[in-house]
Amino acid sequence: MPVPKRHKTHSKVKMGRANKGLKEIGMSICPNCQEPKLPHRVCPSCGYYGTKQVLEIKEE
Image 1 (cartoon, rainbow, N blue to C red):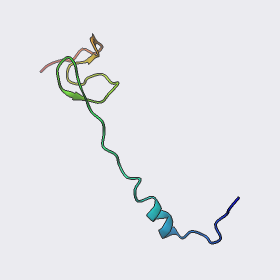
Image 2 (tube, rainbow, N blue to C red):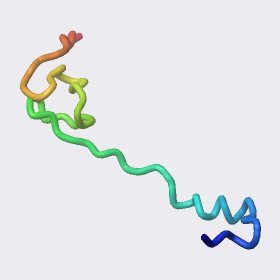
Image 3 (cartoon, rainbow, N blue to C red):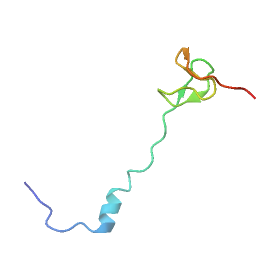
Image 4 (cartoon, rainbow, N blue to C red):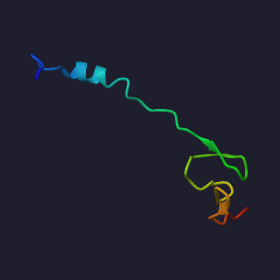
């Protein structure tokens, strides 16, 4: 099995990790109120998860 002949420097290691940055968050649309929300989570604006109401949202 091949092994690197020389030690990889700190700067070369960091250059290799340079493309592992933050990724864009995928958003989905709530089917009840049409607001953007994170997928597979309860909608923070209306409290629905799919077609069921899970949370009671108090409106001020």
